Image (cartoon, rainbow, N blue to C red; front, side, top):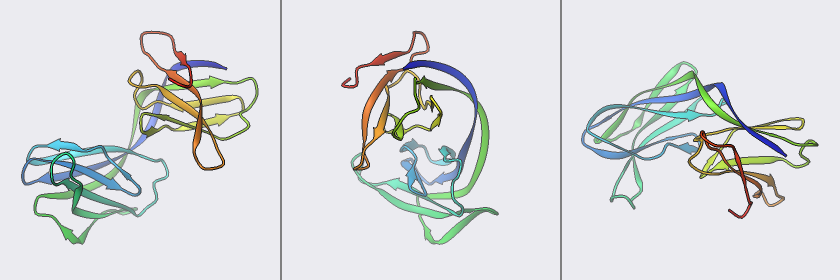
Length: 190
């Protein structure tokens, strides 16, 4: 296997949510089957931007949660609605007094990113998955070339795994991307 880290221009889809908070609090955006990382925000209006899959189904349910009970507490639904082909449609079922979704829109953005490219002698015989920390990474296989879009180069190792019959992945490669040094292939136990 040959591995290299390359700089690429990539188009990415974003979900932008304009939220309003009556007082400071920790919020998270829930959309489809995904959620944004929790963010501590001051009172006022803010825009939360989260990457979404290229093929996000529409209508896409979007919910705003406000953490209750401190860092260990869960999120209480404050506002929700649907992002449809014609735009944002706010639900009338939920209206939190502490936080509101003012607008939600999808946007495409071009930015420079990093891609991990793995070249094999023969095409992989089983499906691969890739992740970094808890983030699943976009992966494309074209013959003997596997390309993985990186979420955060240098922060954590990237794991490449082969799909198993039980739905899990067995790690077969572990790589540490680094802007300043050569790409390191790590032992799979690291």
